[in-house]
Length: 451
Image (cartoon, rainbow, N blue to C red):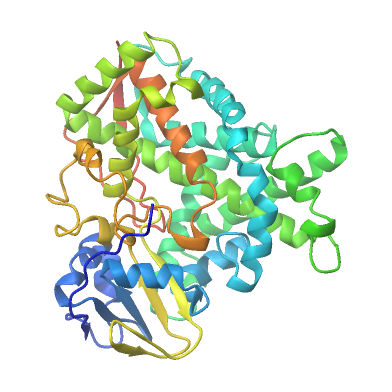
């Protein structure tokens, strides 16, 4: 299908109002980040922010977003958000510059080939069953924690053929602390504020050490075992010859560490956030939930969902797409301008940070009518949204390599769990998003009802 372009208007550039002396817009960014970002299109298609001593440009128009994400030679990975993530993940696939991306992508693609999905789906089904095996009718559970445990287990088994190591820190707890810590560091206006001995900084440092320990353990265990596997870690360890660098060398230990850490964190956090939000949206929209139950009863009749069932679960898939629209896991991204350029008719200097928010795009009423409404059926007529309008996984050469893996896991989890259980968040406790790099809900409890 040819690329569709969103109709453009006259692009404008302006500085967002409300900046404070010294802090600029950092205070508003910290206090109410989602509302602040979602309101920026009212001030133009390209809006300048001041975050303490730093300037940044926010792209608010779909056509500008398409250019930003497609022209990675001009808009390279970097800037306020990516530089913070790179402190943790090094130059893994999600954070590496354009000069390294092509080699890394070619190296990793076999591990995410479509022919691997049926096997991954079987593992996903086992872990979903394990997550719910201890559930009891009427029990109250911490939903985000349960979903993080599930996705951490799936990521470890599917991509690294591993289970949680005895005595190792719980991966799902470390991922949550890191996502919140990176988000705070993006908007801190004072140099050195991330080194202060605050509780949040201490949690972040401990979580970072824990992920490094888990990563080293996965690599060491595989090397010591010497057994053959057909997973992502085997692909990484076997990166030699034409798949290695120009000298035929495999990945260095540092590169290997960066890739493992990247997929541990991304594979756990994004899908856990999507699943957690999906349960709240279904509870708030009982008519959609009833239709979901009808689809699952007809297709599954109480059994776990399998890869072969995916084509027969269109409503479940649309629920995942709509959840990703309302709550894209990575809600703010950044690029660095490599050379003076013009974006939307405005000069943007080399070295500038350009920000892009899927949350902002997905809440534009001119793109998605009634944008705050949960409406899975909008995807009956929007199966192929115009380029730059729907970007939960990015687009172009840097599109998330694990997008199909993540959405498959989400569809199977919702289908299998909703076929047997109704999840009802505790009344009187509104579910709110965290203030982190990932758009996850804050911890909330829900009652389980066996269907």
